[in-house]
Image 1 (cartoon, chains in turn cyan, brown):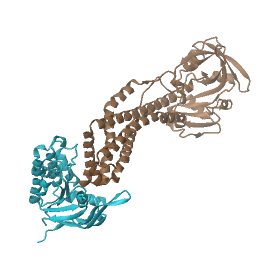
Image 2 (cartoon, chains in turn red, yellow; image 1 turned 90 degrees about the vertical axis):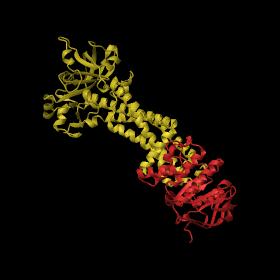
Image 3 (cartoon, helix red, strand yellow; image 1 turned 180 degrees about the vertical axis):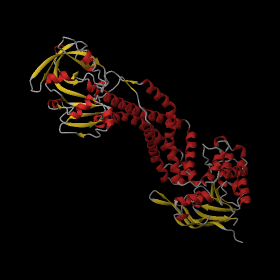
Image 4 (cartoon, one colour; image 1 turned 135 degrees about the horizontal axis):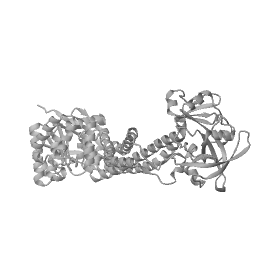
Length: 230
Length: 403
């Protein structure tokens, strides 16, 4: 039985102005991701990994081609519709964690639920559960400045997962972490992928991350040059 | 969401620490100064009106139609006999008649232009100490008792008991002269009953000018106005017109309005500095916090709501400033109100009643208006830079790229 496709890209191009000419960051990308996949976009810097993740995450739109994510066509979404899609269905994990520095760990994780206007009791339960997933319940009242890099990234995972999104996009999540922490956070994500059925799409060039991926899509100069694990 | 924006804005402000408190402190100074200046002017306005009413205008006036208090030449013709109705008001003690005549006085060998004003020494409508016009009369001395204000006494180097000659034209235009004796010198905050004016018994002036039974204007007491006999400015008969309190106070209102405009410049400058600090902070925040903005957007916040957070953040500066201003400013302003603000010597020469001390008046309306001014202006200076967020690409914001 075929798995449900939650991301479908067809003939996607992304061009950016570069002086008087254009730079093509994505060149005719056609890909699909099914529900519950643990997949990675790999390739060197400038290969188009982050650009592709941004389009899937509705932070950007294709110059040409179509991108359908969670049943929505990214090309035609308004700012407000794109925000709603991200709010309800997509979690983001960034290389530099992007935690809000003036908030505590609890506040950072709760933030996504506040945007969903969930009740206080429901928020508290969900936040504590998410912190438990990443093993940071005891750090709930700490500020990000008091945490290590690995802990920060685990908070970012909890923030991405707390709203139980169908899709999590992780942009170089291990780039700022040491080997031990890299393994730890990818193992955490893998576990959540299995337990909650969440689709994870990574962009990475970290071998330590790649070994956990079920599917690897290799990009070069904005094109898919190889796929494994299909 | 709005509550969330306010909550987030407060968290962000508290997280900014010293920068926030510096802005808030400067803005709170501006707020207190605005309230102080407005209170000072309102207090001055109240005092000027209260004193002018008590000393000069009463609760209303009935003027001869030709009388123009700013044109001494109008006095030649601005007088008429009083009708029965006006006489009745005077006899009942609810009004006092004043006859004004231009004259020259010769104090200490100098000549000065003066205004002779005849008034009933027994009157109680005005605060002028006219009783001295009776008590100061010296038996067997033909000199007419007069009272003058201390400004006039000082400029003419007059003191109580001094005698000088005054010269005037009678009703036929013939020059005549008499000696007058300074029976009293009064101190008043109202320069318009003082400068160059000699107050003398009405009947003496009528006799001097052969204007028997005539007057230039009548000052009305509160009782007359309360009776409703006169309700709005206008001509009563062919020779008299009623001038209500508002019309009489227009001069003061105009002067206060001018003073308010000029004194507001300073408070506006201060407010401008404070708002510039907020504007700068907001601009800096948007550059410095691009990743944060990108994160908000990535987490599902619309740009409009991000703009809202930044605008509220700036506006919250003003709310904190008002609270801080109330904490340190209210006791200070109350203290100034309690002790009064001493006015430097010479300020009573501005042509408007100024007491030795001005007691500021802080009305709820004025404080609310100042609060609204501070909040609205800080909202505007916060919103303008926040609009830049709407031009920001979330992908570039996440990377912290400059706009």
